[in-house]
Image (cartoon, rainbow, N blue to C red):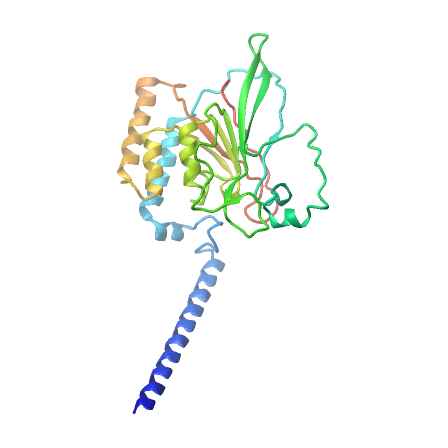
Length: 302
């Protein structure tokens, strides 16, 4: 009798395991078919389809559309300069997660250390957790204007040891890192919830609120290349809280309507005092090919 029970148990376990394998195979096959028909996306680095968005959160999908409409109705975050005069061009760059030879922690950097040669940047300023002050001729007087630019290459871990400038998701390096006097912020990683497919860093977003730069340029998420206004107010805070599953979506609509009415009825055109986020990705999706066009942002005199 005990032998019979043992044999029966073994067969049931085998059948259960076979059923799990079959179920997994069917799920993989179904997902592959949905991807082939472009009903769902293959991975989180691709833009979500309508079905993906509705499955993830219908409320978030609807609120995000309303939020973009509110940003459109509010207009430009600040008044662009009224005239254009020749200025000195400065070239400022940061690294990304594929620039392995610039990161001593990357396995590729360590492997090729003996062959590494000193780079000649030829007038290009490379920033890694550094602030540089750029000088421009004053458009009105004969003095100089200054622009403070801070750059950092760090990204949440998204690859193996051969990737560069990665940090663990649970240990972001951003708190207190960016100087308050920063006018232009350049990072490779986007802030959470802005031009990022929801893959950005919440800690960088918190640091953005602390510093409030006029311009933040980033990349990393190829499919989200574009420009977005930020105002650092209750409407934006409510939208970001919804992304982090903290607050009711109705606050986005409430504060959004207040901001639009205040801008057009009380303050008038040109009254905004916000900033601009730019995802400056130049790759066409994740294809490895460059896309046409560049983002041009007119920034008010700083």
